[in-house]
Amino acid sequence: MTDRSSCLVMKLSRYVTLGPEDRARLAKIEKTERNYATHTDVYRLADRNTELFVVKEGWAFSYVDMPNGRRQIVQLHHPGDIIGLRDVALNCRSTTLSTAEPVTLCPFPKSALDLILRESPRLSALLLSIALREQVTFIDLLRAMGRMSAEERIGYLFLDLIARLRITNPSMTDTFRLPLTQSQIADYLGLTNVYVSKTLLQMEQKGYLQRGDGKVRLLREEALIELTDFTNHYDDLDTSWFPDK
Amino acid sequence: MTDRSSCLVMKLSRYVTLGPEDRARLAKIEKTERNYATHTDVYRLADRNTELFVVKEGWAFSYVDMPNGRRQIVQLHHPGDIIGLRDVALNCRSTTLSTAEPVTLCPFPKSALDLILRESPRLSALLLSIALREQVTFIDLLRAMGRMSAEERIGYLFLDLIARLRITNPSMTDTFRLPLTQSQIADYLGLTNVYVSKTLLQMEQKGYLQRGDGKVRLLREEALIELTDFTNHYDDLDTSWFPDK
DNA sequence: CGGTTGATTGACCGTTATCAAGCATCGTGG
DNA sequence: CCACGATGCTTGATAACGGTCAATCAACCG
Image 1: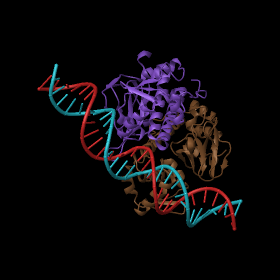
Image 2: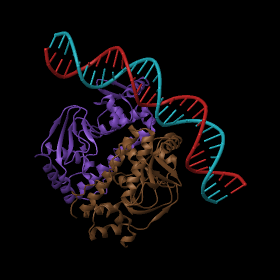
Image 3: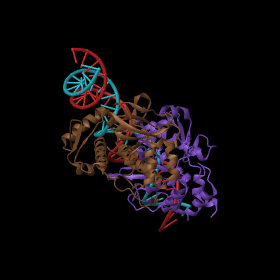
Image 4: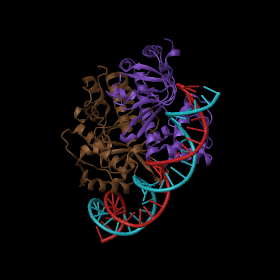
């Protein structure tokens, strides 16, 4: 299997330079790819978990349910992201994985991690870093949900999305595609679809953004950063402590 | 330095059996211990980070600030917990660490992780597991903040605390010490101190709990579990995939 | 063309925040 | 040993933010 077809190598080599052994180890892991339609559950909470995924195409998200239909989306997954790392430590899935649009995933077995940890300290450090960086994202979201108004939360979401998309696409301007329904945005930010709709309209009227054609354009990014006290956590990964190999 | 004085060995050997080499590696890491008074900041957000801590005594917590005085507590740290693992991946602290009561911490240098990852796949797996389990805790908190009422949130907090305390003290009954102010509870759950006070009173009147003397007693734990749809995530750690050494 | 999904809008309501005052507790210093 | 200030908890009045419910509309797709 060539590098071209290995999502995992592409993903990880974005962060660190990988030696030929590591590349070979990773390329061996992936088998096939699978396609999922919009709004499909890939796995469900409490399922037994035997595999992880790398997102090749499309947006997905992880969520948890409450009785009487309440739902909390806890993670948005973009192309290049690793899904399911969290559940490696558990016997069962801690969240349900669903798709926001047509999605292509590259699965690989949980047992592959064993191999990585045993044979590559450098990749082990990288996996740990990825898990820890995800923690920072959770903390940002917690801060938004606990202490921000609806408008601030939506502003935070958009700033975070655009910061994240700029990692893989540095040429991106102030406009990005948003393949989420307002109900999904609400479930992510702890609001309701109705109030998301109303707040988006207000923000548009205030000149913070423009919408249309499934896209969002941030007109006053600096003002939004000020409003939400936003810090971009995606650009200060410290790899200096990584083992050499 | 004997095992008795190594917080880290005690902490980690609770999860996996450690070989003598691993024990020696860990014991070497710790230097001294430090004491902090109640309501002291140990380190602050954006500080450069060079060390981690193990909690030897007392409760601490990590928080982030917002402009105009809003604060979100994101993690509660109990004796035995490792603090600061998250920031290993970053150049700077992502949260501020503060104490809820007099606290004793055992610091050890960040550079020690390098050694662990290079030399012990088994400890690497354990560190990764700890980071991933913390993710599950963040998800539980997100669910509470996004989709629960004030009463449910407080119920969730107490259930989570008692489940966590039972790990290290299986003989614990329905009563636990709670060295947090109501303002701190509010900052953790995304509420205000005033409303925490009112909600606690209501819950007491409904017979869910009793308070007094800095302690809480849960009278109808089953009812609270039902109310909050609580799942104890502290007892299904999967270590089967760990490397042998 | 009809059915489904998602966005919008308006009326109304409830949970929780805000503000302010009062009270208990506790540690400290005179 | 008492007085004082600081801290934390309680309580009440008021207000706002966001939820709920329901109707309408647009877009899409089979």
